[in-house]
Image 1 (tube, rainbow, N blue to C red):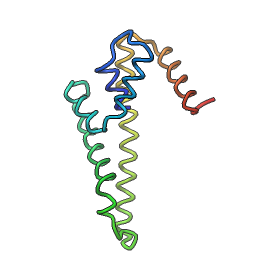
Image 2 (image 1 turned 120 degrees about the vertical axis):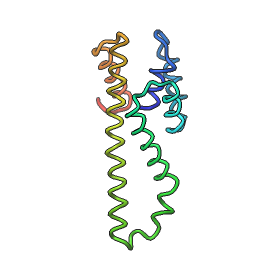
Image 3 (image 1 turned 135 degrees about the vertical axis):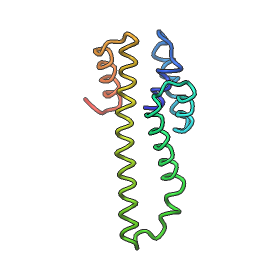
Image 4 (image 1 turned 180 degrees about the horizontal axis):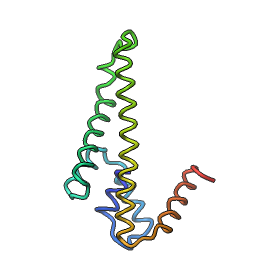
Length: 136
């Protein structure tokens, strides 16, 4: 969602075309979450409260990927530490889902304000969901 938000808010222009737009999204998806956030912050297109929560998500993601294994060695022998780890990961998951929904909502508002109808958005969302095999 961060990559799509970046493309729509910063990189794309009206009338860009499907192929060029998809190429921009593909390129943005190759960026790290942290670099996407820095670019969004630099452009000033994310509300400050949301930006702070996104930064927390980046920090938690980085902990999970880079340090959690080392910091969690032997955790199965310590039930309270194991419970704390599970609670932290569940909290991260819940926060990520809320951020996904909030970014989606912000993007929806922006696209509507740009003159795209809800019907067009819904049709495109359905096309994408079909192409991903989420619906038949």
